[in-house]
Image 1 (cartoon, rainbow, N blue to C red):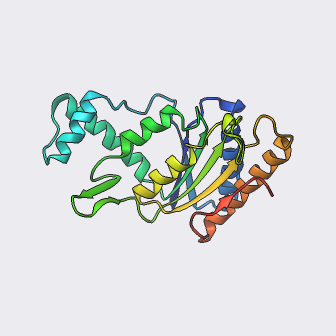
Image 2 (image 1 turned 45 degrees about the horizontal axis):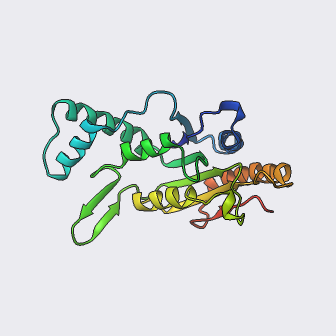
Length: 222
C-alpha cells in the first residue's frame, strides 16, 4: 500500500478555502484509490519541532562530519523524526494559503526542520545540491484572497508558489501539480472559480492512478 501525506498549512479549519479544496481531493483519493493510505499532518497541532539554536548547531555539526550531542543531539533526533514522517509518503498534498505574499510561517518552519543534509539533500562543493526525495509526487493547492493572477501589484506579489515549487524541485520532487484558487477580493468570479478549483482538485486526485505530465497546473479559469 502506498501512502499520501497531506501537509496542511492553514489554521482556519472549516473556514479555510485551501482545506476545503483539499477535502475534495482527499474524498476522491479515498474513494477511487483505496490502495493509497491517507494521513494528514496539521502543522498547527503542536507536533512540529522548533528549529532554534540547538537544531542549528546540530545541522552545522553534521555538515562538519560530527555527531550532534546534548541539546543539539536531542534537536537533531526531533528533526530526523519529523523528516521520517514526511519521507515515509509516496505522494504529497500541500494545502497552502497565501500569507503576506508568501507561505504561512508554520510551513516555512516545517521546511526548515526537514531540509537537512543526508535527508532532503546532499551537497557537493563542485556539483552543488542534489535532492534526495526522488520518485515522489506532489499536488499543491494554492489559495489567496487579495492577490489574483494578473492583478495589479497593489494587490500583492506571488512569493507563495515560486518558493514552494522551487523547494520541492530542490528536494528532488519534480512531479508537481498545482490547483490554484485566487479569485481576488474584487473579482466577481469567486463562486464559479471556487467550483472550478474543487473540480480541478478532484481531477488531480483521479490522476494519482496514472502518470500525468510533470508540472501540470489545474487552474480555476476554465
